[in-house]
Image (tube, rainbow, N blue to C red; front, side):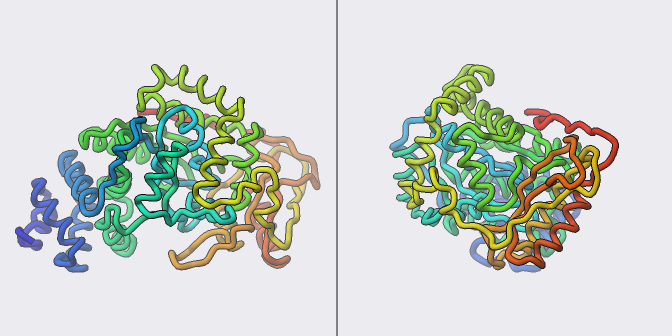
Length: 435
């Protein structure tokens, strides 16, 4: 390193502003190991306590992006726009959004992650598709993108490698919540994809990374400002995560929901978020003049079956079994599938997404540690949502479990997470704000 790391750490500790070359030096030390674990932890804590200016956050983002390979898609003349969500329960939007936007003429190079804790990951959902490969080489990734308009890739050690070590250190050093560190982590990986623009879906609510609306709004604004200063077109939606998105929670079950949505049977909240994000992507890509026109285009392509055709083409190119489009049983099923009944008549007064997400994890459908294996078949399919009337004994949800004991444990917790009472509550809008 050109600069002494202790001096840079002390400068940030004391509230000073680091220059771009100083930040670049720290990032290079993260990658080559010359910045020790203790030093990295101290730097992250200094940032967490004192924040970063807009210029510092942009410099950190670009330094992390440039720490590895930055993809180029010179053969593809279409605009290249991606979407990123901060994560939630039942958030399977990417599986539907990517073919939808590709059908409208925008290329979507999507590098997605695995789930940890109650938030599911796109790669885990795709792994529930028989034969589907997300471990593509960079060349294969580009070929699929060129041929069908979108490609799905697991995180690669070649893309933004500085983030891998920084993310792991944040997790054990109490610095996860820092907005500059969250921003640089998200954007460095996304900008390494070789995109022209990015649409962010920033979740807000009990099952979101940012539970408080003011924190989520601050993150949204910081990501937008940083992305634009890095030369990328960017837009963002603030969306509700105080209720699960869609009805299915669990990897194969969510894939079934997507397959049914391709044929037009889509829960309204999932449809709304997908169309709103897709409209923003088309506007960023310059293929629509405004969100209203973009949304009309997407609705027509969806209704006409074009999106299903694009999804099928991607399945073929990435090794998936195209028969699942017509035969969902090929995804497999859990050994125990039983309904959980309402204990009384009334209205569903809550559908706690955090509690339900944790139930899915305990059923085996999520990870507590990165090394944990996932059972793709377990999970929950809601039969009722917030404010719905319900009769005594009527199903609240169907639990898919590996054993009867697991189902019984889930049943007790699910009844608590979906209380039935006299008050008919209304869900807030699914899209709360935009930037």
